[in-house]
Image (cartoon, rainbow over all chains, first blue to last red; front, side):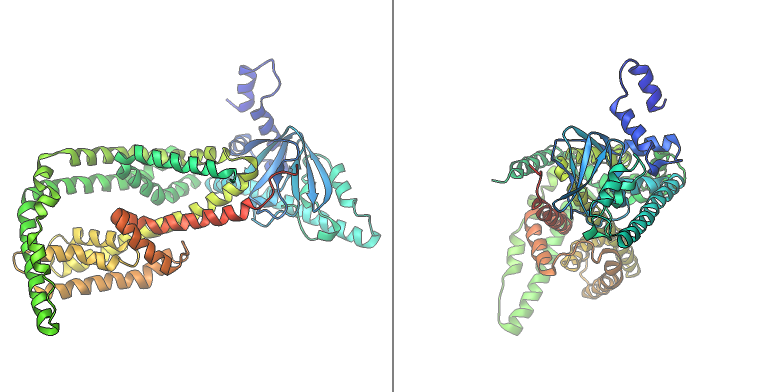
Length: 199
Length: 342
């Protein structure tokens, strides 16, 4: 019985349980695109759902990156130095470069009141991929494509910035206006940190 | 006072209490952890080839369990046959040791004019009373305890292999939000290094035991596998291993009906080959860089640990110190960061 089927039989008159919301949210991310439902459910079970108070750091600029994050409820402010550069909402997936590397975070993520965030830790992700190489290959391909898309977009934005002398908030605006789950937020950057990715 | 200090003290007290409660089955826990460390990679490899988790665990657990059962049966039979002779052997050992020391002292007095009176002191000792051999024979407690511990190994090792990651995830999920990633970094740093060190240590012991067993067998010593096994265990003690390894073959030599001085040369040759291979090949390839402690610190720690907790403490003190080093480094780096914007 799948998570959704179980929910229908045990809880038919209420809204979707948190576990179902988390599963659906992760399945909608580019990371699990085309990945079989059973594998997605197994991976989602490894994630850590955490609740945050307003102003609490999800992670801090300069910290070693360990986990990718997916907002289930609420919103997160991305801050670089003293500047807020983006506001991410429910369903947004960010910090996925942490699944590959432990480079320091290039910006801070600060939760708004009542935010619920699901974290996928690199060490668990690596164990999962090692145990299921076939499914893991699909997920790693998705991750590579996602990072490639961000890299291309960043290069494009760099060109645009150079040629048009765009104002400082161009990228932040692009992030805020971007559609949910396109993963566009991970390459948030300021003009002073043009070669850093939000890891 | 720092807010995290009471929590840290609470965790340490809880761990000590847990250690006290689990003390009767420490052997079962130790062997199960050894099995986990050795078999976790094999289980993962089988799972990666599409074997179900439970089947992979059982497949990897079965061969070492069969070896353990065989070794336990063999050891119990050996002990049952040997224990009635223990008192006589100890008496003979004491006499031989006193004689050897007397000869050594006489030589020392002739050359340097020093008299140590070690032989007299050795003769006064009552080894039988110290080891309570009579009670050892009457009581079945030791064997019962050993049997219980060994019986616990298969289920404990199975559950460790099956559920360890789940327990770990649940434990790390208890961390507060601001310490969550820090906790994972700390865990990963400690577990990776410690697993590599302990696996390396086990292979080191096995290789040393195999080499010295062969050497003792070729030299015609009785019970070469037992001697090699004891050398393998002694070799796990950093720095002092070669000295400790001399103990078992020397005791066997002294308990022999006739003392043969030439056998000491054979023991030294066998141990030199074993530890030479250990230092030149095993340690650089299997253990180098896994703990990164200063040799001076490590040497002092081994001596102090030996004084406090004997050989087990001497073996475990290096990984424990390495673990504490990583934990403290990660804590000092992480705790300096702000917790909230408010």
